[in-house]
Image (cartoon, rainbow, N blue to C red; front, side, top):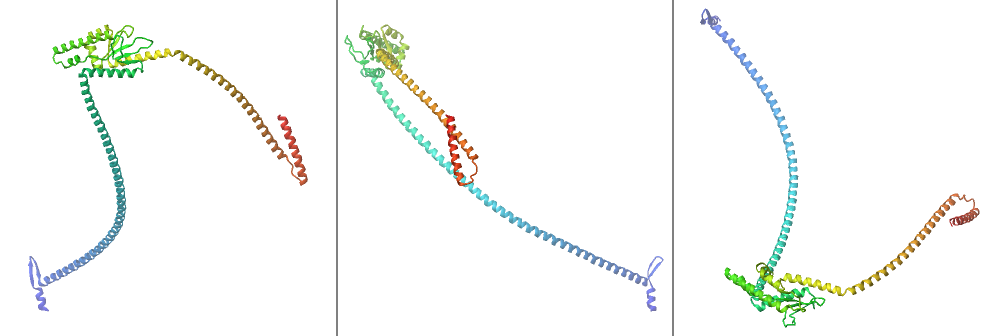
Length: 417
């Protein structure tokens, strides 16, 4: 023990005036160890507490996580339910949309089909009309070709003098025959001097006839058309003027007979264009023909003249039949007078019948009023009838009532009369 205390009292460290022994060192070490131990215990306690707090927090976090997970699972379930409902709605909407699209496609297909049918029908109709028009065009082309052939034939006819005269004669005869009645004209009639005009129109009231000539000289006119130069055209024009003057002179000498024909004759030109050309470029020839009492006429002027002659003939016939018309009018007036007299008689009968009907209506109104009065009296008698005490009294009362009613009715009738 002494050795130990000696050992513990031995100095170990000197720090200035302070001396530290081994005991001091051991005490300090012990204190330091105890402090370290306490610090370690405190640290371990704090660590355990921290771990407990962390565990509690972890548990809280776990509970929160579980609650959140449960909420998430619930939300997921709700979401799945909503997704299922949305899927069902989308499915229904998709089915409706598919059905609507199908219906619209069917309707559109139907409309397209109807449109295509209508378009096809319209196209067929248009093609049919086009074919008809093409047929009409073909017919018109055929008519044009036929007309061209007829024009060629007409040119051949006009190039021949005899056939040209026959053409002018036939056209003049057609105009006269269409405008005048049969018997008012005569073709190729022979006059007293032996000449034969192409047509002789009979005038009314014994007036002289009108001579018409259809032999127009067309060779010189064709020569004018065929001439190329100015000199040739002048020569052809002079020849045409000369031929016209000769023909006018022949008509005046042959067909103007005093007392037998009119003092004016017609020279028929079978072409309106030739007639217009003569009056435009050969005025002197026209004046000479007028002085010779020969009128150059075209088909239209001849037709107009024939219509005037037809009106004159109708007026002459009306004048001839004037006395017959007057007699018919007199007989017609007599018939009208008889009809007037019979109508007046019928009016008298209708007046008498109307008066009789008015009298009958007055009588029927009186009868109606009397019936109304009688009906009113019967109702009053029925209301005033006393009660029936016995069968015998009822029969007597009925007889009295009947007798009274009869007397009352008799008095009413007598009063009304």
